[in-house]
Length: 162
Image 1 (cartoon, rainbow, N blue to C red):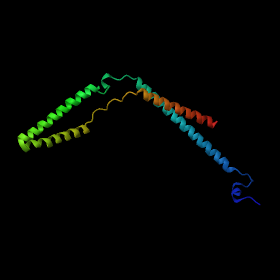
Image 2: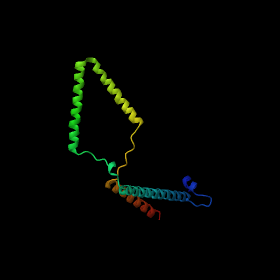
Image 3: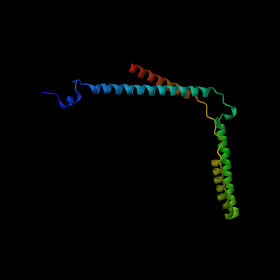
Image 4: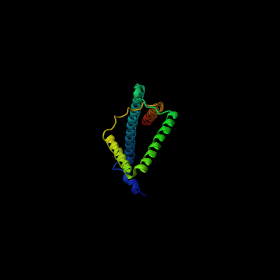
């Protein structure tokens, strides 16, 4: 019977088969080494992120840089007073239109032009960047969890390589 054409291709001059297994083994070892290096880089990056967040959390923030949302009673007061002012302005504009005629309608395009000018001016002259917020406990917990997961993956890959 003879050797099939597939098997014949794998047998070299000395009659030894299995050369493809050696290549496959070296490829898997190379892939494992690349995965190990990637896991090491990932673990180092996660540890660096955690250290940076921990340092940022420990630095004191100046009192004037802290922004807090308004309490609900202040929000309600602002809504009522702001709504009242806007309603009053709308009624005054309608009354001016009724008594003065079409000339008072020129106020609307003038106001729109001023508003557009202010918006364009603010885009060309932006405010200074607000200070970054301090990391919250949830940020630190998330970074620590990522760091532990990366270290566990690195240790698992090291165990597989041995």
